[in-house]
Image (cartoon, rainbow, N blue to C red; front, side):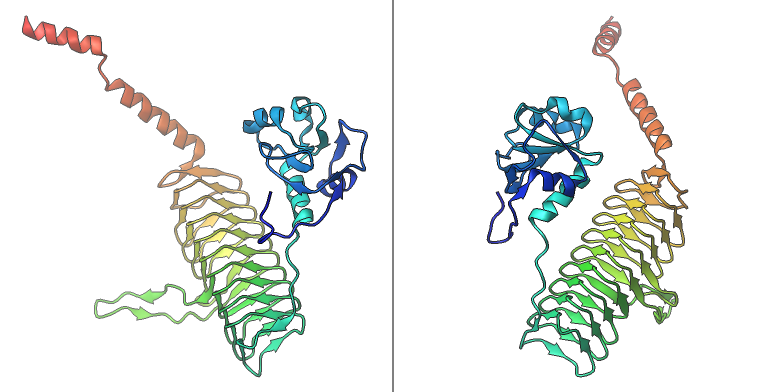
Amino acid sequence: MTDPKFFQRQGPLTLARIAEIAGGTIAATDRPDQEFSDVAALDTAGPDDVSFLDNRKYVDQLAETQAGACILAQEMAEVAPEGVALIVCDKPYMGYARVAQAFYPRPRTIAGIHPAAVIHSSAEVDDSASIAAGAVIEAGAKIGARTSIGANSVIGAGVEIGEDCEIGPCASLSHCLVGSRVRLYAGVRIGQDGFGFAFDAAGHVRVPQLGRVIIDDDVEIGANSTIDRGAGPDTMIGKGAMIDNLVQIAHNVQVGQGAVIIAQAGVAGSTSLGRWSVLAAQAGVAGHLVVGDGARVGAQAGVMRDVPPGNDVLGSPAMQARAFWRQMSHLAKLGRGQERPKQTQETNTETEKT
């Protein structure tokens, strides 16, 4: 059960309503009016909880679960214990996500400006916005309806933030335009200088970074991630992109719609990440490259050349996944070939003594 100090639960919800939210159909029960009060994992759920199964790794937990209802795929239905109401869904994890949101909706913004906030007279703050203590809103900035600005955040001059956004505490935004329903977590840095300078033995010369960061609607950017403004063209973050904690995105990068970038990944300047592409944890992509639509870059991979659409790459330097695993197989075989069987070693020893 969640801690009520931190999470405010809604409900209860009927089985029929839960199935509607999940986009599934009810099976294994004739009680669509049965009510449930919470969501929980298979191994901790009780009779009043809704759980789910998406990964076959946990099928044994399904067989033993005490959950009152479970969201799952049709082929898993026969594993569920008798008495568990089933919601059959094509995408169980997506269905569970929607149900969990119904029980735990994001808190509504409470309009108001804290007395300890500092807001420039030329800034435009919607009456329904929330500005926390210590926040600074600089000249000409615009804050949209129902948007919340966290404690000690700094919204730089001219920055525009759309409706229903959530800016976490201690974030800083400059030289950027932010769409609606965007969530920036604590400590995010948006719009600082890109890392651009001309090399010279007498001292490197900084190249002025004259672009912006444009963040489209429905983007999330994790804690302590950094996105540099463009050097001339803008840095662009596409609609619905999901960026994890501790990610670095350099100047002029173009991140496509729905792209996913996981913790500690880094993207060098002027690189383009296609729609629905994925960078796994600690992956690095060199500058001026194109990672195509739907391509996936494995954890800790180092991308040195373009990745075609729909391709999977692994390793450093990154290569096609099939080639990577072939090389790993060859290396394993070479390693085994260098090991001398114990019996052979003993035979050689006896021969040397003779």
